[in-house]
Image (cartoon, rainbow, N blue to C red; front, side, top):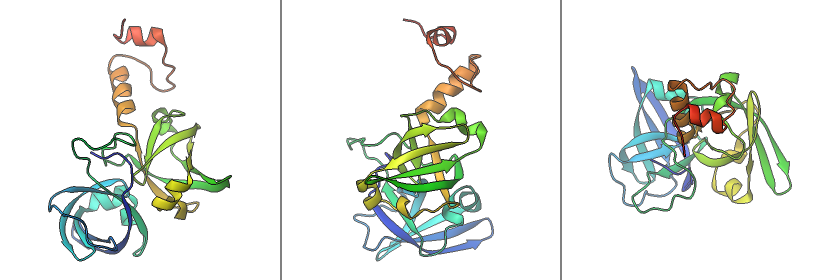
Length: 217
């Protein structure tokens, strides 16, 4: 489990496939503090298992499916990635609950400056619109962000100076794919409403819908 608060930015050092699996090597730039072989580390938001370390390099066993379903298979060697180690009991939950399971890779629509912030707009297929709510949470390349605008086929977020400085999102360009994980709690609510007969194609949650779904005072 993660929070979407990025701890460091690293680079893809190497990526090699062998059949349906492969090795992903990430260069952290400095040795990882107290590495625990087998621990979970989010790389651009994708939960991976640490297989070993050597100096500043981290080694991960990755499946072909992981490389296909995330941007870790398409980013070139040398590309920067966001790193977050798994949440420990008692840690501050500064972002939101992030599982490290990517829902989709989506193309960047635009990245424009607005004051001291950057506005990142990401496109997605219309069927994903149900998962985005203005002022709700979303993880983009592992970064916990607040949805500012949720359209029919896009969402936008603001990157404040701290986010720009501490993550690699400011390097994304139109057309680049980013890993998107929608809000876990929202997905469970929608699943519940769907199972109980609530309509989720264009959800308008109100007291009647909640009452009909079994939620009462």
